Image 1 (spheres, rainbow, N blue to C red):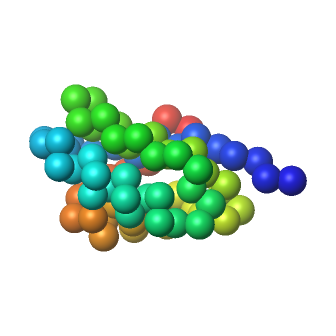
Image 2 (image 1 turned 30 degrees about the vertical axis):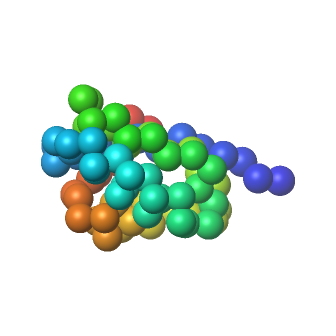
Length: 75
């Protein structure tokens, strides 16, 4: 049975709408990610995922591959 978790990552590097597509695209490419939303006004990246398929470290790495630094907060 798949148990989904919502993880909030935060970045202070989200300054333009083009960030949204880059980051969401990288996150959606990961197996186990059901939903990803980037909120540029708050710097929050909300990811709904299966923690057994994709770890928080994997999410942070995917954001890094898009060119941005992010860290988890709010577990």
